[in-house]
Image (cartoon, rainbow, N blue to C red; front, side):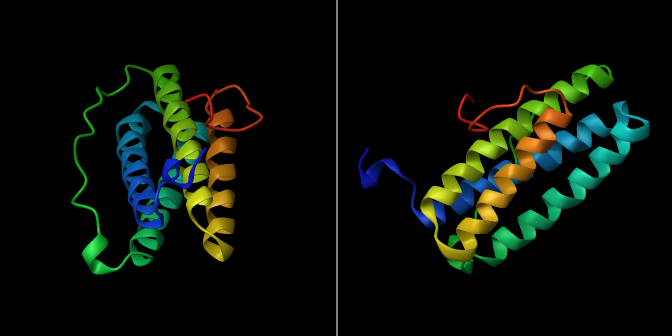
Length: 139
C-alpha cells in the first residue's frame, strides 16, 4: 500500500461528515418504527451523530466544507426488525469511515476517530450486526 492509497485528512473528514449525515437520515426514517429500549438507543445515537457532524465541520476550514447533505433516499423500514437492520448497516459503514479517518489523521484527531469507530461498532452490534475483529472492514 502506498501513501496515495490513503485519503487526505480533508477528504477523510468530508467522507466522515457525509457518513454521519447519512446516519442522521437513517435514524430519522427508522426511529418511528422503534419503541422502548430501542427507541431510547436510537434517540441517543441520533444525538451523538448530530454532535459529531458539528465537531467534524468545525475541524474544517470554510473553504473545505462539504455541500449540503442530500441523496439519502431510503424507503422507511416497514417494521422494527428492518429498522434495526438498516441502523446496523449504517453503523458498520460508519465504523469503516472512521477507521479511514483514523488512518488519515494523527494525535487527538486520530484518537477521536478511533473512539468514534468503536462507538459505531458497538452500536452496530446493538442493532444486530455480527461483531467483527476489525469493525467495518467487511463493508
